[in-house]
Amino acid sequence: MLRFLKNKISGALRIAIIYAIVSAGWILLSDLGISQLGGGLEPKTSIVKGWFFVAVTAVLLYLLIRQDSARTVKAESETRLLFDSVNDAIYMFRINRDGTPGLIIDANDAAIERLRYTCDELRRKTPWDIMTPEALSAIKPALEMRKRTGSAVFESVHVTKDGRRIPVEISSRITRIGGAVIGVNIARDVTERKRAEEDRRRETLALERDKRRFYKETILAVTSDKFELGDPDEADQWLERAEFLDKVVTGEDFSRVRRAVVAYCRGKGLPEGSASELEIAVGEALGNALKHAGGGEALAGVRGDVVWVGVRDHGRGIDTFTIPKVALMPGFTTQASMGLGYTLILELCDHVRLATGPEGATVVMEKKLKPYSQVEQRIARHEAIE
Image (cartoon, rainbow, N blue to C red; front, side, top):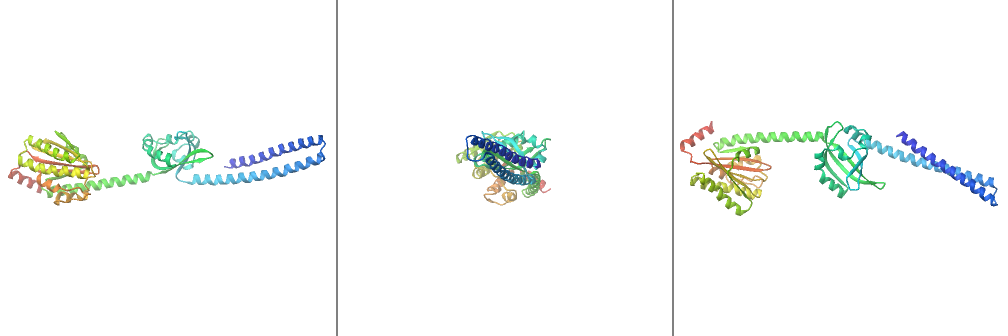
């Protein structure tokens, strides 16, 4: 910075000397010319006056330029001090004619320290060169917004010289300086915030698993092992080897699919009485999917001596806290719980499985191909109590 100050002051002195030489030479030559032509003033007097004028104006010019330069240097020094005192990484870069970022012009100390590059090394890179390819794909919408509005805030990932990845939140702005279009990025390290968010997410998932485990064990006991609560990733296993698949999107689909899936179960040997009960249960499940998730899929298959029908949707699922009410309170329903009919389904089926999460719900209804005997029912109840 001192070198910059000296260059500014010596530049002002140089301007003043050049001005003095040129002006003095002009006055000398012009007065001599006038004298040769017979001017009224004495040549020497005219020359002295001219030189005096040149000296005074040169000094004034020097002082003015020096004062202006010193003011400019002070302002730039204060700006640079502020620039380098910020903990966030800041870097300025050119904007190409096509709107893409060009080479980095300058960077503050925080950017240099964080990225492990020297300032000269950074000046040979563009902002895209210090981001991961995955991050570049993710920030395209934000860059479009910056192009339209002149600014945008987005998350990205910086890559340091030694290959470390640093999650950052970038506030990006486009401005004009001296006729040139310049971009300014202020990047905040959000590593700690991301770590805290991940810890909270894991704690939430662990709490959710514990709640589900508790509900699963409690509901199994209360329903004599008839109602099984599973995790969303278990649902695909329940639906393996399905021999029937159809979609429900409209009200017309509802009746058609319900009849078709029950006809499949009858064809597998399901007695008429059990088939009628299963048809009501399937209707409740399909109605939930159509009403609360805009539709879903019906699947069916045989597992041992059990025929099963699964209904899968991609709605908002059922909140964990409401699952006991959904399973045990007759007719319980709220828009949030989406639980209408589960108690009826549980009453009509031999075994019911439910997996639900933010990406949807899956219910699997099972019926014995031959009815339970009274002895089997007593054994099942006894095993559930144990």
